[in-house]
Image 1 (cartoon, rainbow, N blue to C red):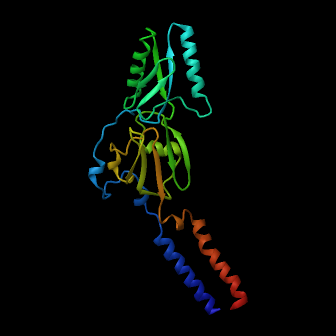
Image 2: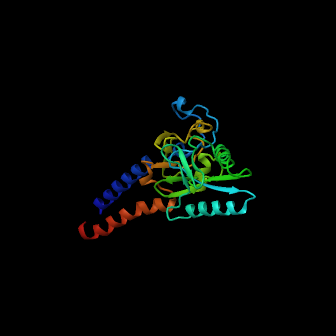
Image 3: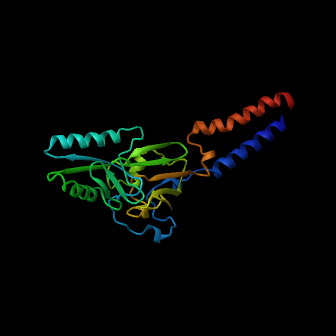
Length: 255
């Protein structure tokens, strides 16, 4: 019996050491902290910039004109292209152009949505003097990958922030390593750039990491202490009682 008690004490001591050494502190999960050591050069202030079209972007284009026949014909062709099995609209190719049915090639890479509208409209007005053009970005989405949840979400406004992205995706910080968050961001040439930053620091605000852009992939690695993370008293009790109960049952046969 004395040997059983010693085993129980040893197991309990081990569990307590593991649990308390693996606790996730508020310093690891809180945002807007001011005392986090960082490379300040990477977090310098950067004004919000409108999204500019890049290679592999997909846009939808709609035309308005008094010429009903032309309007219906063009919009029907474009709509059928958007609704096809690939879900594509007008694709920005490697050379930076899109191919518009009936109007040919137009270079749009590096332009904002509004700038692209004006340029496409000018091209169309060479044939249709009263043409009004409206374009939208079809791939206006961001993606989140984390241990608990992965998903695709719409960028619902131009100046959407990383904090708003977390709220939209329903992410919680309990098991995420906020000190090593990665954003995979598409460059104008279509190639991806990986940016890593510490989301705990308040210096994130107005930095290059603050605003979410279409096509962004946000990756949260798992906190190294998350495996033994105890989130409630009942979880702690269960963690302690299960091995002790097992040891007690086994001891009835061996001690």
